[in-house]
Length: 316
Length: 178
Image (cartoon, each protein chain N blue to C red):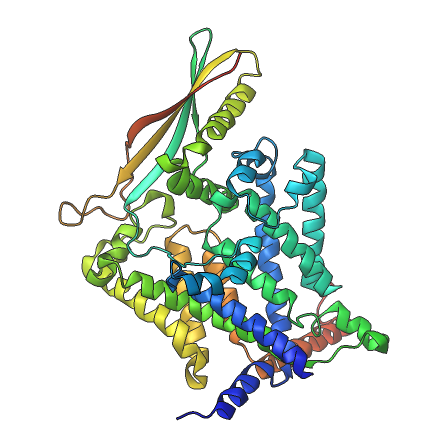
């Protein structure tokens, strides 16, 4: 039997025992870099999706989504002038959050703009966009600007702005749990389908013209290999959801996960989903590992600047 | 950390847990429905309902496209192909994927008929731009095109197989107001 105290202590240890904010800060940098790339690609949709000449009109969205939701276009309209101003603010906010300058306000602006755009094109959104919204909400409530940020640099000079570098990691834990939920739920749903069980799911998924990326003729033309890959997908996804929590398996599982998603990215055209998942896997990097990374990058930086000053490497 | 803050955060954590498991809850049960009332408000405000159905329970076997034919008063007809996912330069991927999503999961379906007038007008605007707004349009017809991968028992399609022709069906006609 587990006592009530054990549960409370476990809860406190897991969500509230202070940890360095380096991990969540590194994750912020990776996540905002991803959002910036997505933003640049998405900018070409200003007229065809979000504007007044977009595929679906704002009025249709309003009629079919009458519940209270965050959509700034419902308040300000979606005129061209407003859209360009909106996109400029959105882009600047992503850059600001990436650099860690006024991190929380910047992330709140990013979240409001992102949800507005996603609500505007609600019928066009897929799992990667849902994850973008969920994770950005959790980043807003996290101390992700407390280190590896311009905010932290400012705080070094002005003690009034100093923030604690050790923090209760509950927001980071929620992101980690969310990632596991994505993998485990998708495996659960796949177990309900006969093609995943008989091993032919990958055959059908890779024959859809709209999803094809680069050709993989020998591997994906062999039924035995296709079956093996289908079942491996289930095992890898279940592993990514569960084994990543076990200390000894964490790093191998993260590497396997990245290889798995890169494989899908090469074979199939599912824009951004694989990159979202790869960046999300980085949330399992510990503060100690971030410290090692920081010192290695620091050493290299010192080496390069010294070599430049000595004339060994020409200035960039 | 003060206790009141810890309790408040713990409620937020529980709210997120409830959001994560919502799809697997019996939402028709009155107690569950009542418990999920505040959670649903949070989920709908940010539109973060989650189901994670990627390629499940079975991957779709149907590939869909959409096109429109705009007919003008002088009898001329111009065909318009809606954007679709392609293997072009990566920058087109997101654009194409968004159109693939709405075409294959919404516009193609009869229960989303309320999207058809907007879709027809989108095609009309693009065709009118091509013709420099010189012709007078009469109507826009929307066509769905699809290709279904045959069951493995019937035939094996190599990965390099490219679909040469798709099945087509006219599903909507939009009369242009004069």
